[in-house]
Amino acid sequence: MSARVDGNALAGILSEYFRLDTTSAIVQCSGCGTRAALARELVYPDPMGFVVRCERCEDVLMIVVDAPGGAWLDLRGVDGVQFRG
Amino acid sequence: MVETRIQTPSARSIQLDVPGWPGNIAGQHLDVRLTAEDGYTAVRSYSIASVGDGERIELAVDRLPTGEVSPYLVEELRAGDQLEVRGPLGTYFVWHPTDTAPVQLIAGGSGIVPLMAMIRSHETSGSTVPFHLLYSVRSPRDVFFADELRALAESPHLRVTYVYTRQAPPDWPIAPARITTAAIAADAFSREENPVAFVCGPTGFVETVADIMVGLRIFAPLTIKTERFGGK
Amino acid sequence: MAVISRGFFGRKREENPELPPGQYLTEDFPVLSAGPTPVVDLADWTFSIQTESGEVHAWNWEQLNALPQEDIHTDIHCVTRWSKLGTTWSGVSLDTLFAGVDTTNAYVMVHSYGGYTTNMPLADLMDGKAWIATSFEGEPLDPEHGGPARLLVPHLYFWKSAKWVHGLRMVATDDPGFWEQNGYHIYGDPWLEQRYW
Ligand SMILES: Cc1cc2nc3c(=O)[nH]c(=O)nc-3n(C[C@H](O)[C@H](O)[C@H](O)COP(=O)(O)OP(=O)(O)OC[C@H]3O[C@@H](n4cnc5c(N)ncnc54)[C@H](O)[C@@H]3O)c2cc1C
Ligand SMILES: [Zn+2]
Image (tube, rainbow over all chains, first blue to last red; front, side, top):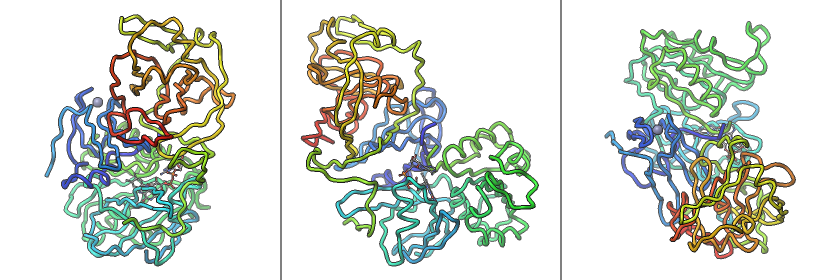
């Protein structure tokens, strides 16, 4: 088992760039189609960046890198994001 | 930083005055950033044990022997020191006093912290929603907020049950053991009550408990909210 | 500006003039975790090199271990600022593995079990600069550290030394891999401090 945490732990870094709380947004996995709140997904807090994986199929959903010039947000495994006001 | 209080042999609560703090809801966390003189930084998340408005907040931190940040917060931090914090954060692992479903709380070790905020919010708001707390600790000495929990458990709306994993009190009927399906089933609401659950603690604990709870079929999977603190 | 945390030093680290800029010495071997550790059965394990013609050169575990093994003494430098000096590895040189491979492509995309990728010029794998490592400090490589086998390219930042390596694909252009697509440097020379681009 690896030292993973919940998507909720992303709230800090993402709050620097998004005004709404993004961790309550619903994301859809392009691997298996599961929809879940970002806060429910699995987060591997690698010191190089957060790697977010689908709670169901463990495919990579997104990657967040806190680079000095500004964060990188890679939504490679996400089919869609629904923000909930 | 205002003052720290010893909670258990390895943990402390920390009171902070945060100018401009907007207040927080129960279950939220913040990020603490420490910066060494040479510019080296480390960021970690900590749940907020306090709730409501006001610029005074409370954290509670358990010291991991090999850790980088937690030993500093537990042993080194003193009144008058400054801390850089970002928050309040998170809108998912939270409980609102207007929520009406019965609440099952399950904590492992320091995982009590955000659940304590929920219990405090429940108490101060006068909510009569039933709350059950199942709290897994190594020994009686490892209970965070022990006196306050004892007092709050007098409430007809809160039930507190302990699971001791290493050492139980002398007259305790159950030998010390890891949390079991039976312990969780015994504390749970019935499916007809449509309960919700918050599970928090080290990652291994949370995953074990969440699997058991899904297996019990009392909770609809989406009503079980988890907060993994990390580790194995 | 950042508030200095009185009495905070962070994990034990020393600055050392022999280290690349911005690096600290560490004694332990931190584990980075971008995902679950893949479980690879040695009976199913393969390593392959695929060229532009579609030709695939593949080795199973026994075949890899039957090739000449080299001992490697090297320093390693992680982009998260730790460096570890004088580590000992053993494995098979990429020169050996490329001996029968015919390619005119100048770049390589490295693929791992678990889906991780990283990119580099072929020249950085040649002439005694890179290995498929299967042991660390005399012991079989721990799955946490990339076992059964990882790429070892110690002259680049350590993310290029892909854990759980599964194969190399020859490509015409230096397309970015997993971290390189997200702000990390396309090449990653620690002495030039090529952390981000
Ligand atoms: C949203 C969120 C809220 C949190 N709230 C709290 C809180 O209220 N109180 C609190 O004490 N902690 C809390 N944590 C955990 C906290 O963020 C740190 O992970 C913890 O204090 C360890 O940091 P460290 O720098 O001391 O250890 P590190 O130097 O990061 O780790 C040292 C070793 O301990 C292991 N480890 C890391 N975290 C844990 C863990 N939680 N349990 C067991 N082993 C671990 C690591 O894998 C590593 O081997 C929370 C985490 C998250 C994600
Ligand atoms: Zn999925």
